[in-house]
Image (cartoon, rainbow, N blue to C red):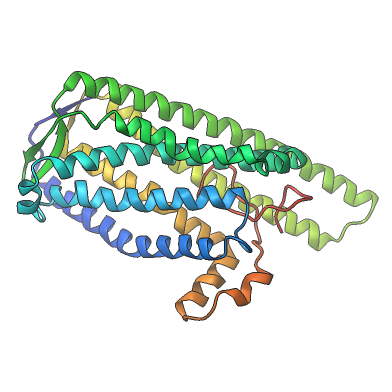
Length: 345
């Protein structure tokens, strides 16, 4: 991919301004919400939100928050010419740090999604082995993979040189070495392809297993009458799982398709267009987790309301159970693992 300096029509200025302010409004609400969600999970990590899934989710949540802040400080504010004197007084240091953090967090986000998908798939397909695998001391190595791989990939950018490119009224950080940039972008595309394919395969496998298990439960209900209310609840849980899976898969695939368009397919992309779309996708991708987990978890809603009222959280610890199963595809999905069932009540 090469950035182009083609002249954009006048209406693009208004579109860019409207999109930026919409994203800022969205993030002004989402960022505090996400911080509250991660804080609640951390405080209640030994009761309501214990287990490897939540530990991976919390690490992923911190990474998402870092990615959001980094995007605004390193890309969106300079593109709007805000604090321009400060950025220019720092040379390229601020922009350099932004690029390193942006690529590091993106890799870690993809890894987080894949790990959570694998965690949920093992719980559904093989509950007994799931407990053995994720309770093993070796399971802690997932955190090395979750953060370590991203740090290594980001460290490749440390010796690189960058410069600020002015376009319209804003400035954008750019690579000086175009050959390195092309190779690095192709590598990032290949890595994201691996994550997306893995997520799709894992998710399809889990959904097939869930469907088969539900059919077995339904057949058994006719031989040994099962409370229809319980059966309906299982169906509702499966439907919720499907909804969350579809939403999270759609977000991941949409992000991937943009990368596919911006790197291998489109050879020349205007700098402003590229960063505008990239920042929008980054905001949606990084912020969706907080909204999905809050929308589908009544327990978390209760904890959040409790926190907003400045009341102790521990009064709910003994009665905190999620009412739907977690998604297998993303850190935007959630549920509290049980020992005897692939569903979480």
